[in-house]
Length: 375
Image 1 (cartoon, rainbow, N blue to C red):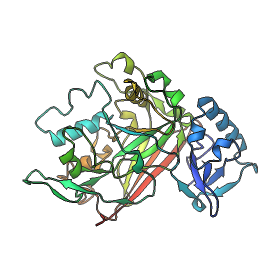
Image 2: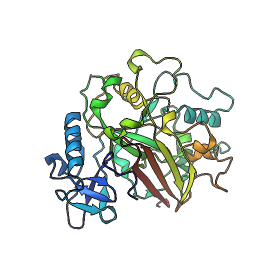
Image 3: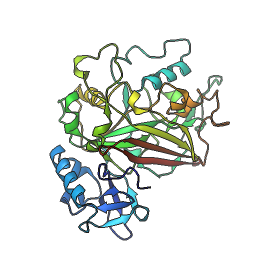
């Protein structure tokens, strides 16, 4: 479908045609427009060199490309005839836990007799460092991970394939301009550093995660695969999607003051059926606050760094962004008899947002099919 890919969007990807080297293109309608001749940094197999140029260069190139799209000046190929690649080399990957509804649901599932939120949650964006080397482009198969599991009624852990394989519908933010070690990025500096957004599915093995995460947090239950969309939507295309954050109580500390949300709608599609519609606008912590907190201790950032929102969940059952929540810990099957992922399942995450042209833009899908565990 060409809907959502007009001149007010023009997302970037790295593509190749048969016998050609990968280079950068933009999506317009049902075509991929080859923009490798617009800037030398676009004639590359990743977006990294272009993203490192900074916001002035991003704006200039975007305006020039918009003026050339539709003319004979740039080659264009049917989108179904090209191969899409991981669009940027991932430097570091950080995943946050920024949804109040998701964090509250998880707390109620795992700690039903306690307060759902831990004491720090409303004071800082909670996150963990993930594994950049297993970030894969949409369409890459996901092999069911193996690891240690220990159920509540089991005396000892066992080793084997995950029995509670899950998704997490998220939004990811791609750093274009990095920062030096010992420096900080303020909330208001977000536009100078972040190039664009991608859809993210942070696949999760809940049984492996539950056994390993105390006391240091997620490890093997998360590190086996994280899928991102092949298309990177530039922040400029989301100008009309900016919206106010929900009320934050208590007020954040001064270094976290500010930021805004985005009115982005998500669909979770399991084997062709929409099972949830999480709204990103309900997220408690903004991406600018996440980046400010990520660097407040002086941690450096690099071109290609990816930080994700954590699971996007809304207040209603039909807006939950993980199967853990949709099945309430596996106790309440949804969509008939579904709980966690089975071999052969395909999950597609779809995203859309208001565009600057008055309609809606369609962000890149994130798709993945579950393959059986390997011996």
